Length: 323
Image 1 (spheres, rainbow, N blue to C red):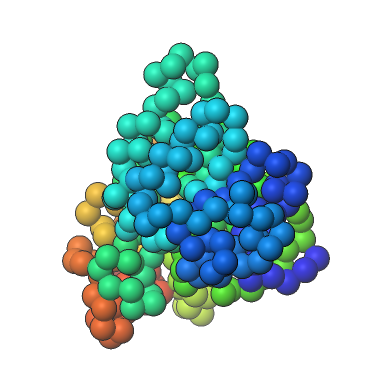
Image 2: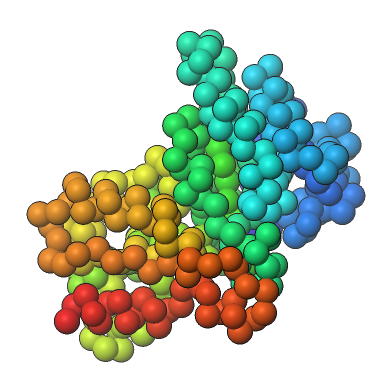
């Protein structure tokens, strides 16, 4: 068992597979000598060289296009998009090419590629560098979507994502990079398998990414009020671990879904719809969402914190829900 930061765990996952398979490569803006905008790929250029750790032009469309083409011809690229906001520049390549090529070619090619991208607010990145973009890509058939939180999950899910023969969008929250935690295993964590991060009996809180830690803080505060909250971390947004969520909802009967997205059109709404439609008989109350405000992400720290969903927002929703 080793204590690692999330960013170190992500790097370790990439390095493990790159040492094992020369077809695995990393490409993106400043991933080489600079070590990545947030330092995740620091030192990888020295170990693997410029052919496999490739700095690219400032063109997200070119990055994803190169990854798609190389994956289709036998390589296993890891493409970094510096901020998930910039996925918008590459959406044609992501949703019209990478997502559909296996289907459009009748299964004759595979697309084993990982698109790593940094999500979320909290670092005063302002509106163009702070969005949570998971709803955009979970909407598209053909893409798998991963959003880990803890270092253990970061390492295990990175391994599984590189191993997968489908395009995987891998979200990393900028505010979770420096969080340390125990890493007891270097085995892949299967995509589509969630995890119970805290057990409880009265309420299910579904959270992922950095919002998981906010949910855990809320669960701790609720415990002081005699409310036992179970915190479910999907880890993979698609495929979603519906069985794990169903088991928790059957036990608690009350559900809050929280994410850092704008509430309107959020993936939290998709999870809420699943619970309402397929687990209705297990519910004691309506599902509630706790998300960010429907406004561009502010730059000013006090406004950004007002924008973000906080533990006290989850606590307030729980009190309302449980009466």
